[in-house]
Length: 73
Image 1 (cartoon, rainbow, N blue to C red):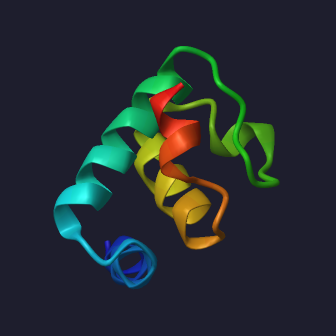
Image 2 (cartoon, rainbow, N blue to C red):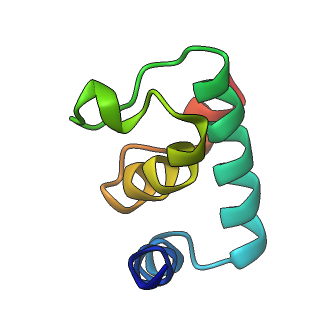
């Protein structure tokens, strides 16, 4: 749980708006549920469970691999 809070704070440093962060994460989770591949290097076991999509989405945002144009597709 503490690790998720740290990721959320780091993601807020990137996005600057908690509302936009919420939208970005929700849309990215939806993409992952539909079969989209992660934009960061992860082990397959790390993203085969939908419960891990939230953390994965935050990590993608922190690493700068997510932007509004990519999300809207």
